[in-house]
Image 1 (tube, rainbow, N blue to C red):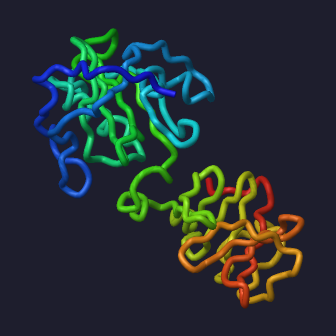
Image 2 (image 1 turned 180 degrees about the vertical axis):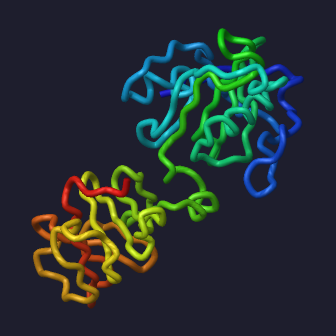
Length: 276
């Protein structure tokens, strides 16, 4: 859980002019007040390489307020003199220019500021879902630019953002949006010619819908079926997307998507097959 404390942001940084526009022509950095109780931990935390997002994202990971574990993040990298920004806001813009992160591109606020570091946050419902610590003139990083960055699972971003992304968010029976690591779906990648197919990932198992037979032979463990009766032993996952519900075969060989009256049978993908 993040450390919280009294507001310590300098008045001159609370209202920040946008350093260019973010997504859809909206400002990357918006004017306004920081959260009433901003992150109170250190802005400089050693970042470590590895698979642990929290470890490699340093202070940015600590500043998050995710419903689950951090989804993505990273530590500092080097850049050239022309890549850094002349202000903290331009340092945030430099992160988007250099890394092209898969997060919202507008609506960031200054949450906390120090002489050579500033924490920007993207909040949903008053909780930080993306955190970016920018630093000034660090070794190998001239000007202002990203030092540590971290974000929550995309399911915690607003639907206005996720509805425009290639992944599709599912919800549980109570309507709660589910993390991508639990369940997600997407159209097949165009660069492999698979855009007529669809993929569904449930935990570690991948399923596919391939009515046009665009996937290579042997990729599917069984044949896709456009309409089948729901087997009596199928497990109701409780997940749904719109009016489409998801059941799984007792042996996980098929995902059944549709209504209880008629479902499509999406077979599992044979391990080792992927779009290069």
